[in-house]
Length: 351
Image (cartoon, rainbow, N blue to C red):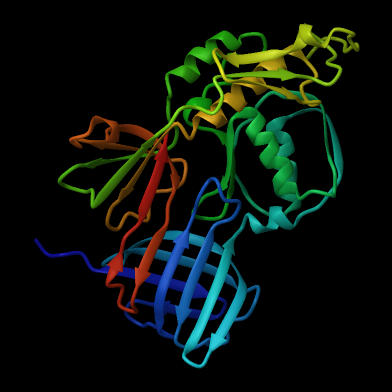
């Protein structure tokens, strides 16, 4: 059986470089994409700058034998020329949300519509944006970037905020948070059951020990918190989002909680203006904490089409802790040499 030949295509401003025509002499190309890091990153070494400038748009495709997939979309943010070449660093489209500082007040808007508004203000394209619950009032200020406001909202809901390979922004529930909104207002018991099932989202790929895996490592640890309690700042209603909102003198009557056991944590959140929202935020925060409980890192050859948010599975590994289905959350990819002699993506997945 013939071996696969790794290939690449690089568009950087007016520069176009490919495996067959390696203009500017690409020597090393490393892409880091991670749900837990705000923006995707590209580090590129060229033998010459060839007119590349700050702010140039960048797209990278990786694959084999000319069958390539987009692996990175962004723009140049740093140049470091030397006598022997140039080191170029680029970041993904999320940079626009990191640079956006704006102030706004939203009333009776869903979490998804708030996300759509901020993504549009940043001049970006939205991918999958889950609707989420309706927030009676949500305020953002210009002291903090739009990204951090949106990330804080995502964490409340247990959502993931990230950009895909094409640079579109995703704001969605995945893994244990995929079904937290399915039950609707007042029906969070069903959502708890759905979350406990650990259903994953997105497309999936399977890797078998002895066939695909070059390396594999698993981490298991106890959750930092077993129980989360959310207390609003003068919550207004215990009867749902559609009722009239009145201030209460007994805040504890409107606290929400998720999980059981110790250690526990109390979070005071002024956005939790109703009992239903407090319950929903507690479930979301617990989902965020539990993301780190079980993680698997694998190394495979040449799978640039795998994207953040996909579900991946491993099987037939001697240690059962390395087997099972998980959510893809990290995807470093590398290509060394102008002729693409090595293409080894490394994936990190979590439940």
